[in-house]
Amino acid sequence: MNRRSQPRECLMSLDVSGEFSPRDISDFSVPDLNPDRHDIFARRARKPWLACQSDAARCDFADGKAHIALRNGGFRTLTLWRKSQHGRTLLEIKEDPKMIPFVAHKMAEFISSVMGSSLDPETFAIITTPKRRHKVNNFASLCAEYIGKLLGIPFYEDVAVARSHLRVNAVFEFNNIPSHRNLIVFDDFVTSGQTLFSMKKLLDTKNFNCIYFAAVHNKI
Image 1 (tube, rainbow, N blue to C red):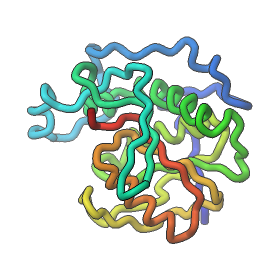
Image 2: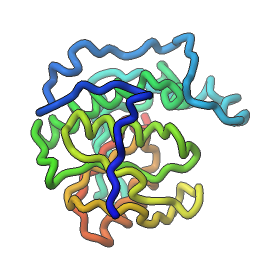
Image 3: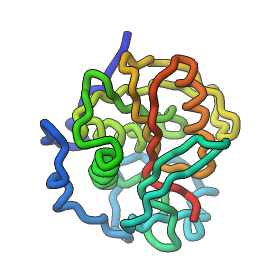
């Protein structure tokens, strides 16, 4: 049975109805790049990863960085921001719940600029890539759900599952097949494009009409 997610009222409040308008993001600004954070997301023991954060990929969320990432002879992913020398690390971004509405509003505006401000909820839906390290409070899933609310289209959670944690040549399987034929496929960060390409291979088996978006392209 197809399942659409329910809003997570305990995590965020949404007051969004009707057609998306640029006015909805007029009061948003980039969160502090060096905040004194009290994360609500539980942090797991990732000592090797945490130890190298001073040299890790960062993003400053500067405007004018929209980019089309190409892979495998023509597979395209549209990204809004690019990796930068300064700003917050990708780990910090993922662990800050305030980043969810910020990324979602900016991505909704970006998607609207590409696809038009009015998407038919009967024919369009949004999905994301499989959850791997973070099964609960998954950043990409929470952003995609919020984007769906802003665009007025359904969000399908856990459409695909991964057989392993491998990024290269990952194999995905269907878990929750959307009834909508036109899908916006969202991912938070894209580096090699392997994850989205594996998603494409899966979705192509059922002839979905897809367009692929990511928030940050993790290459300069």
